[in-house]
Image (cartoon, rainbow, N blue to C red):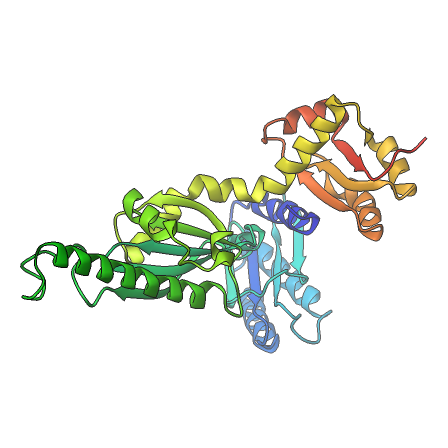
Length: 364
């Protein structure tokens, strides 16, 4: 997980933890390309209604939140590049809280303006999901479905059917002249020809202007083996096969089933950089190779430009790690944030204080 994603998650968690015992929390989201004027007008209208409506604690809290929101938006002449999300309101502790997200990593896609006793964080949560894009391919002898997994969204791309025969051509469904071994040969031709068509479709769908990072394949074990056994798939796609999974349907339903069956792999993929860095770090410690650990030693290694990979536990607040990550970036060193729920993640936190570094060279 990148430091940017980690910081965004922490900010979102703070928003998510805010709550009120009445409708006094406001969520405003304006997509890129949308003018802030409409949001201003809506806020002004609601503020006027709170000014002249029935008096009471709910009305007073909502009015204060609207005033704070109006004040926050005054700093913006136009909508930021990826949109803006603003939260303002008085919590159950009688505290005014505000959160502004004007540096979003990806664009938001809908206008949101709502009053509630909690903030709406759903539109931000998808931005912290793994950024890898997966190609989805479910194949049978008579049909295939292709799609893409972008974040949590399954995007169907294409479905194909074997126009020459049913899934398993029978004697009754075959041409009259096809009998015995000739029928078996024809069946093999139909299947191989269809598999070639599926491979061509996969190349178009997954190696175009927006190539996928990994490929997940579904189907029966036998069909997957037959389809992937030859070199019909482009070598770039063969290298990106992340896993094969048993799926019953070569359809959009099958694409959803494929994602469900690959859930464990998808979960592990996000933590893979941290897991690999942890393995390298502990191996280096076991073999007596040069590493740095503890905040002071890591800072010293950074000053000497000796850090190859910086490891920091996610349990350490981001405000305490920002300078170290910036130093690592300045010397073009890698950095990973280590979840404590990873195998040996908690050990890394407890034994090494949550700070570690793999070094480019030994320092005195």
